[in-house]
Structure formats: structure tokens, C-alpha cells
Amino acid sequence: MDREHASRAAKKTLKSLMAAILGAIAVAAFGFFKDDITVRLATAVTQGTIGGEWEVEFKEYNSDKPNPRLVPFYETAELSQLGFRVIAKFNTSRPPQQQWDASGYFNPPHFGLAYISAERGRAGLGTYTLRQVGEGAIAFLGYWTGVECKGTRQVLLTCPCLFVRKDHRGLRDKYAYHLEQPCQEIDPSTPEPCSRPVLR
Image 1 (spheres, rainbow, N blue to C red):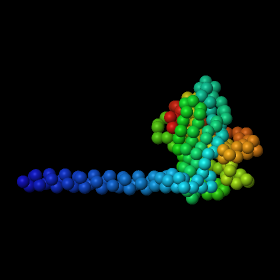
Image 2 (cartoon, rainbow, N blue to C red; image 1 turned 90 degrees about the vertical axis):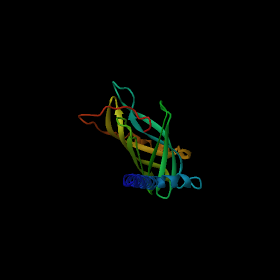
Image 3 (tube, rainbow, N blue to C red; image 1 turned 90 degrees about the horizontal axis):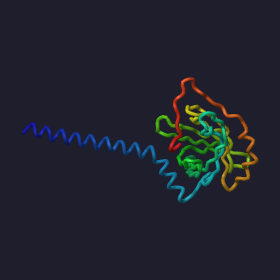
Image 4 (cartoon, rainbow, N blue to C red; image 1 turned 60 degrees about the vertical axis):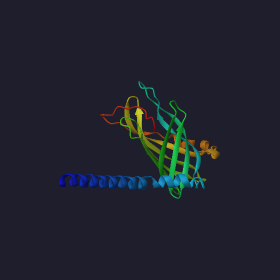
């Protein structure tokens, strides 16, 4: 009888412990994602200063493994903003077509985003650090820094970057000079093998 009682007590204690652990995980997950959830819900009401569609340009290595070279790279971004908080959904039409999310902050005149892929061996880590142009928050100049595939190995690459609001794309020509600056690269002596990310 005592053994059966002890077994029931142990099961009850285990259930209580599991409930507490799951509750803690749920609270932590909510705390981690609540800003993103709030921003996404808020965009149904207002876009914020920089919310909307943007065109993004910088350089990255092409997929020519024997002789990789830096080429212009174009993508689009849908920005959602609430206060300082910003979430971005990026799209590229380059085969294979990709979509990925980034998050960051807009503290005028500065704007920053970061993204990461949890897949080992994939070049899925990067940041955009930018400053708005003289015309205001309709274009941003800055730098993209990320882990990039150069042939079959990973390198850390920093290149000039330009964000232009889609309905002000005429500013692209005015600030194209910024994109002519050279990229900087860190190529380790013992590089990791590389493959393109499914999601950047």
C-alpha cells in the first residue's frame, strides 16, 4: 500500500514538474516573440515611418565555384514597423527563389536589421547597418555584412548596401556611387565548407 501510494505521489510530482517546465517554456517563447507578434498585428492598422515595400541592392559572390566573382545582388523587402521595432520579409527571384525574415530597429536616422539560419554549414548569418539619406527615410545607405559562399568555402563579407523605397526608386541612380565602394572580406586559413541557405 505504501509502495502504491509512493508511486502515485511520484507520478503526481512528475506531472506537476512537467507542467511547470512547459509553462516556463511557453512564457519564455511568448517573451521572445511578443515584439514580433505585436509588430505584425500593428501593421494591420499602421505601417509606421518605414513600413512598406523596399528595393535592396549590394554585392555577393556568384555561383561559379571555379572562379567566383562579386556581382550585383537585388532583393525586395516588406518592412513592418511599430515604434523602434522593425521586421522585414525579404524575397529574391534568383534561382532558387528564397524568402527569409530579419528583425531590427529604426532609431532615426539609423536603421539596422539582422538575420540568421540555424542550419549548420549554410551561409545564413548577416546584418544590414544603414543611415537615412538627406531626403529622409525614403532611402538608406550603409553596409551589409554576412557569411557568404565564395566557391566552396565560407567567407565573412562586408559590402556597401542601398535600400530605396519602391515608390522612390528614382533615388537609386543618385546614390549608386555608394555601391561602387570595394567590399571587404575575411577569408580564414581553415575555412568551413559552404552551401547556399534554403532560407537566408
